[in-house]
Length: 244
Image 1 (cartoon, rainbow, N blue to C red):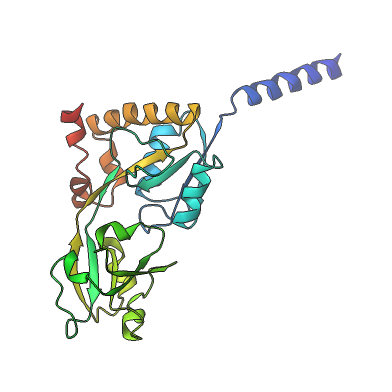
Image 2 (cartoon, rainbow, N blue to C red):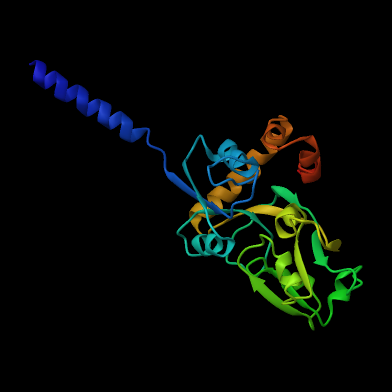
């Protein structure tokens, strides 16, 4: 009798554990320090947890941006973090943004070039992340030199392989660690979004995000996930309340 009771108890424990098991949600992004750290910490990962953590078992993938896009577009991941609204991407975008990217900067040798706007890059060879679609900010007659990593991209200027390098404000320290060149804003700030697979699950995740992000903003809960108040104010998430 004792053995039977033990077996029955084991069955019910196993059944309950299975019943409570949450569906898996795979989230991909490039590693951005303080936002999507490889160890699972950071502002964007925390916001994803706050929105989806109660209903899903989250798996974070830190990889290159191009691979992250490929994973989501092919359905091998459910969501990418920190994307622009690209019309040519096979992705679903929510109504509300996640953050606002700082402006795009040109890094250049002031003794050789006078750059005050994007049009001044005409005819020049320009280095930048090849999978960030930076060409849309550049003159058509410029030559784009795509690189895999932004770290110390200023070396390409020093070696005279390119005339200018372009990167976002958050990566200036990585791109020109010695601050040996001039930096000039050439591109506008852009809204960043979560983006989802074009599927029934993606539609469900999209709707859930738009619903939950409003709750996080209205309850002032989302502020705690940002590095500081300045970063939160720059994200302009408070405007979501008026938009709603």
